[in-house]
Amino acid sequence: MTRTALIAGEGRLASAIAAALDAPLVYALDHLQPQVPARPFRLERLVPFLDELLDQGVTQVVFAGAIRRPRIEPELFDPRTMSIVPRILMGMQSGDDAALRAVLDVFEESGLKVLSADEIIPDLVPGEGVLTGEPGPRDQKDAARAAQIVEGLGPLDVGQGAVVAQGLCLAIEALPGTQAMLEFAALHSGLKPDPNGARGVLYKAPKPGQDRRIDLPTIGPDTVTQVAAAGLGGIVWQAGGVIVLEREAAIAAARAAGLFLWARA
Image: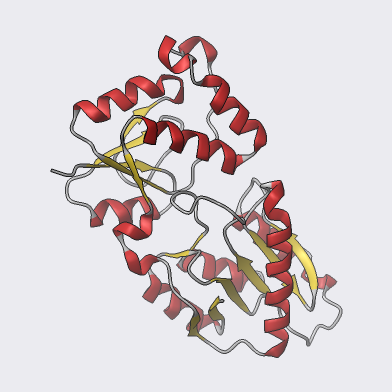
């Protein structure tokens, strides 16, 4: 029998995954507030937590939602978790992707299979194509420029998004997240050289070489609302690399706002 545990982060993805699973066990780091009921656990007691999963017959886990770094309290480490602390801390010093990779390795070494969100709901990650609207030639140039920027930032493990308008980068995604990036771009929209030119795009993509079972970029209806408020023309993302939540609602919101949604190859 296959039993699945959901490690829930913040945002709507965790509740979507929970609804698609058959009676999952749902957990979350105790400093997070996921939108789905979850039992808390602490990173400082990771090995006993894995024992708990195995004792309950869990064979596979899926991570879903945004995970903010916890504040580590050294006095709470149990002896067995303490033995793997150097690996986790080394990952944290290298960046978010390396830290998550280190944690995934520990889960797998305990005998648990780590699934990606789109293995649970395949339609979450659209393939190549325009979902709505029509990006023009200038939008396509802005998308290509934004893709170059995000790919270039990938080795630095900074973020997964950028805002480009008329060939200029107005903002890049950093630790505060996508909404903060879009708010920053809105504040500086006056930097566009031509007020009547291309409005600009939000572009999102995984980091090059990123483990796609965890922390894939995510967009949804809220993102559409934020992009419209920033005065941009549309959202572009790497086809096959970004989760689109509530797809029909996102498309409807984009149509209402006059935005395009494009999964770019």
